Each structure stands twice: as structure tokens, then as C-alpha cells.
Image (cartoon, rainbow, N blue to C red; front, side, top):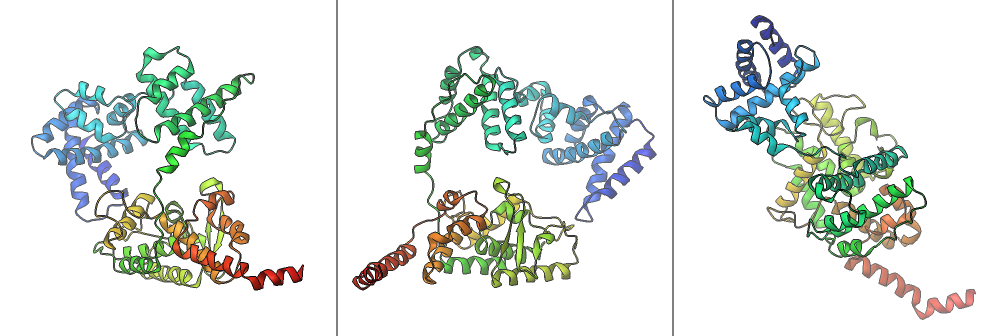
Length: 454
């Protein structure tokens, strides 16, 4: 930022004009932050770490610490834009984040505001991924599996954790793999860690066998995974009354600054229950995925790389019809690529985390979940409820649920029936219907008729 002051005013105004700011007062804060930084940058004649530290100290004497951090993030985004336009060589905050492999700009800003910035920055330093003694082996294996079409996301996370452990323990370099794994097992005492270590051992053995086919394959140990499975929380199967209560709360969800939120959340709940959709699938729905004529929605490239077209019930289609009419009244984007669910502010879409937070809030408002903590029913339990209620309906219609399981697995987007069986929770109603079906089959009259027919 060595240009003339008037050029700086023009750059700031052009930058603010491009931003999707929600409130009329927001540009005032942006100009206040950017103009104060521009004055310091013009005085120093360069935009570097020294300029930034001076500005942070000077603003710290005027603004509250939280305000300085917020305005510094505004400056950081502005500097990124200038670096992209090649008006400056680089953003010093981004440079520091890259040098120290820090997670966010906020940590860098806090470190620069501390009495000893160098020490604070060193405390932020994170090891770079796959730079341990086994880093190259793990990185090549993950990339190879992803090239073959596997997502391999969970395995990538497990390998990165092990890689960080090895970088923090240089004294273990050169030790046999079993010794490294044994030390890693003792780093945590959580119930899931032994199962993760077993997965890691299998991943590393698979990578080593690829480089050396003569190496013996590791025999899997399923005991840690079984121990974890025993501690899994039993799904909560919502009753019809629970569902009605959740939908009623969603219709009147309090959100004065976003009036459309109620109908958005109501439709999300309808799709989660009536179609058994995952939260991620709900978040990725677009206008082009809804076919009102055919009465279907398209779910594209979700878990297991599966896409599917789902027929919906009349009540679910009524909910979709209502939200499409609300979109027209709100005059939001009609592009087929636009998200089905939208914010009132600048037509932004709902991300997966936001959807989860709001739906969990509805569970708490319905007194189905405690006010704090992770205990109690989950949103994902609606998917379990969908399966149980569907099987109950088949029993009541006289259908054979076992014959219908392949169709149910396809509807849910599962690879096979085994994945669907996990969702079948035995409830009292389900047990009663199954018992009645068996009693009707095993009565003496039925047995005699079967013998005569044979």
C-alpha cells in the first residue's frame, strides 16, 4: 500500500462495494478499520509485520481488545484481496499463518497483540502434515486410495494424527512399527482410541504391503471395535406425538431477523423424517433437485458416492410446495443451482452446522433434549425413526418387510442391506407387530392348511 492516499480511498470503497454486507451500519465499521490501517501503512511506506504490530498497539490504546481483534480480521481480509489483485506482495497475516502452520488468522492476531509476539507465535506453531519418518508412506497411500475412487477421509485424519505424534516424538525415529504403535496407544485413554489404533495398524500394513508384496498381511483384531460398539448410544425412536410437537415448534420458530427461518426449518424436519435424509443431504439440496411434477427430489453424490431420486409422500410434497411459494414471495434467487433453503440476509444458504444447531434448538424447546450437553435424542435419530416407522407400516399393510429391505437400502443411499440393518431398532410396537405376524402364521389352522396344500 505505497500508493497515494486518494488511491487508497478508492481501493477501500471498491472493496466494500463488492462485499455482501447485511446492515447499513456495517460499511462504517469497515471504513473505520481500513482507513486507520491505511494511515499507518502510508506512514511506514510498506505493509509488513512491523506495520501490522504498530497498528495493533496503536488501536489497542483506543479500542477494546475484542474490537481490535474484530477490526484486524477485517484488515486481514482486505489485505488478502489486495494480494489477489497484486496491489501488494503478500498479506503478512497470511504469511505468518502459513509459516507457523496456524489454524486461523485470529490466533496470529492475538499473538501479535501479546507482550512477546515471537513467543506467542511459537506457541501456535503446528507440525506440517506428513513430515514424520512415516509421513511420505502415509501420504502416498492416502493419495493412492483417493485416486482409486475412495474418499478415504477418516483414514486421512487417522494418519495425520499419527504423523503429528511422530513429529512430537523424534526419539522414536528408527524404531519398529509395532513399537511406534505401542507408544501411540498409550497417548489416550478414551474408549475409541484402541479401535483407532487398530485401524491405523491396518492402514499402515496395507501401505507397506503395496511397497513390498512379500510382506505378510496383518490379521485384523475386531475386539476394540466391538468394545466401542457396545458403548454406542441407543437411537431414540420418536413417537408420532414427538414428531407433531417438533413440527409445531418449527412453524413458529422465533427468529425476528430472519422471518423465513421457520418455514425453512419446518421443511427440513419434514424431509429428515419423511425421507430419512441426512443433515448434509438436506444442506446440499438445490432448486434443481426438486421435481414437483414427478413428486421426487434428487440426492446427489452423497455418502458412498451414491446419487438417488426419491419419491415423496403427499405431505412432504405439500411442504416443498409451500417453501417454493415462500421463495417466490421473498423474491430470492430462482436459479436451479440456488440452495433450496435460504437466509433472508443476502439470500445466503444454510450450511450443515447451522442446520444442525437450529434443529437441536428445536429439540431443546420441545423438552426432548436437555438445555445443555450432547445427551438426549439426536437429529440423526429421525433417520432411525423413518426406518422403524416404515417397517411398522409394512407390517400393518400385510407386507413382508424382509422382501422390502433392498428397496429401503436403496432409498436410504446405503451400499447394501447390512448398512440398513443398523437402523432397525426393536421397539415395543415393532415387536408386537412381528409377534402378531408370527402368531397368525403359527396357529393350528394355518399349519393344517399348509400341510393340505403341500
